Structures are given as C-alpha cells and as structure tokens.
Image (tube, rainbow, N blue to C red; front, side):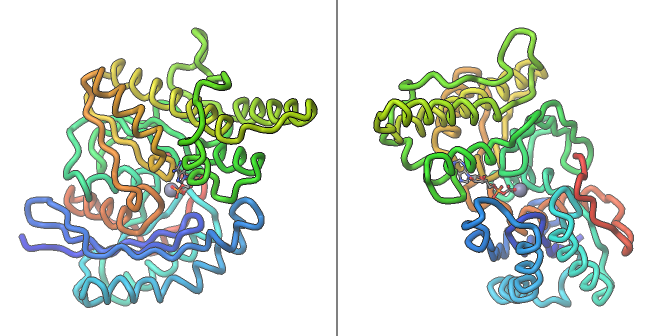
Length: 344
Ligand code: KG4
Ligand code: ZN
C-alpha cells in the first residue's frame, strides 16, 4: 500500500481551515499543510461570533485558503486520495460552506468524501504531533463552544461522551469574564496574560458541580461567571479599585482546578492512563501547567498539542479523515448534510 493524501475542510465556527495530511502505509501521519483564515476580528466588536458574518467570511476565504494549502505543500489537487469535512457540530450556515466545498471537490475529483465530527477532530489533532493514541484514552475538549470529557477507544471506532458542561463552555466563560473586565474578545489570551501578574488565591471563586452529590464528570461555568460579575459589582459600589490581575488569576484558577480535577478523576475511575487536552482553552498556560502537575502525581501521561493545533483548523479534520481511511471506514454519501447539533 502506498501513501495516501487526505484533504480536510473545517468551517464550523469562525475559522476557515484547510489541511493536507499524508497517511503512510504504516498508518503514520505527516502534516503537509495547515492553512487557516480567521474572521475573529470581524466578530470582536460584537463580543462573540455572529453566524451570518462567519458564513460570509467562510464563503470568501474557502477557495483562497485551499489554494494556499496546495501551494505551501506542493500537492496537486489531482493527487488527493480522499476528502474530509466537518459535518457538525457547529453553526449551520458556516458548516454548509465547508460541506458544499468538500462535496464539490469530491464529485469533481471522483474521490471519497468523509463527513466527520468536529469534536473528534480536536482529539485527532494531537496525533499529528504526538503520534497514535493508545487503545484507550481520555480527552478533555475545551473550546469556545464545548467542554467535554470523552472516552476514546479508537478515533475511528468508539468515542463516548462521559461528561459535558451543563451551561457555558469553558472558553465561553473566558470570553464573558473578559467582557466584564473590559478585556478584548476572544477573552482567553488576555486573561491568561493578565493572570500571570495576579494572585490566584486572592478571591475564592466557586468550583461548579464539585459537591459530593453533583455529577462526577459534568461541568458548570455559568455560576462562576455570575460570581465574578457580582464580585466586580460589589467592589465598584464600594468605590474600590478592581484588582484586575487578581480577579483574572482567581477566575482562571477556578476553571483550571475543576477541569483538571474532573479529568483526572475520570482517568482514575475508568482506569485510563493517558489524558489528551485539546480545543482553544488547552492553550491556557495555567490549565496545561496544573494538568501537568496533577497528571505527574497520578501517573497519567498528559498530551497537549501545540496551540496552533488546539484551535480550529483543517489539519485536524484531515487527520481524522486519515484515521477513518486507515481503519477502512466507509465514506459518506455525496448527499451528506450538515448536522449543527451532531453528538460525538
Ligand atoms: O477551539 P477554538 O479556537 O474555537 C472553538 O471551537 O470554540 O476555541 C476558542 C476559545 C475562545 O473562547 C478563547 O477565549 C479560548 O478558546 N482561548 C483561551 C486561550 N486561548 C484561546 N482560553 C484560555 N486561555 C487561553 N490562552
Ligand atoms: Zn473547535
């Protein structure tokens, strides 16, 4: 068996991503191209992603982004062996742009099309950096739209959601708290930076769903966000200066504490000894730092892909497509539709 080239399209939110991955005869993956065009700046003044703006930006960026992926990798479109695309979950209009493009190329090139799950794609991203996953591992997926704990028993075989947020996603909490503190959108990077100068123990913000009767693996961040809002309001009423760095550090500590504690608890309960953290919030320095400390104590191997692979991109979708091709999975039909609420 020779090498196969997999082209991946991502358009579920505000990033237009096109990636190309080479699948070797031994199943090894090589990243050949990872081009991303982001419309994040167009959404910044609204404080969150505006679906119509995202769809239009995908429409404009999709073909140029794909051309760049071909150019940077030197791959000819006619040499592509299979096409993968995010079919869900995500914004309906945004997904439609990627799926339509992927279908058009699959039909024109007469190559198989794989509609894939965006969440599984985030986990597949790690295999581009750290190689194949063990037979069983746990993934903590934390982004602007998702906060999930997934048991992975083969990316192409079985993925089981064992926990998720009951309200806001972790990244959403970062974005909302940043807004409260008058920091720019997206809020994760500025809070991460500011928190470095603050005291994480200054304010005891609540750890959602950590009581003895609470669900073991689910998360809740909306109470934390409200608690930050109340704390800031009280300080303002009292005419106190807001210690922004302490608020940022204490909020960040609460998020990292709950995410890592629950992920490690799940690893222990399920007797899994590898934890993968992916999604935009995986780029958070305190989350990866605390996870590294706690995983080392618990004897769990921690895998966190580099930030570029953590945020939305087409390479992760190409990687997941490659895992499906390698596993001999059947392709999707050309009338593949988008599924905005697609579960794992
Ligand atoms: O995975 P992603 O790029 O897009 C989604 O699928 O949502 O994640 C974006 C989210 C945003 O909420 C952003 O604030 C957050 O990831 N984020 C961070 C950091 N960098 C990005 N959160 C905390 N710390 C960071 N360093
Ligand atoms: Zn994502």
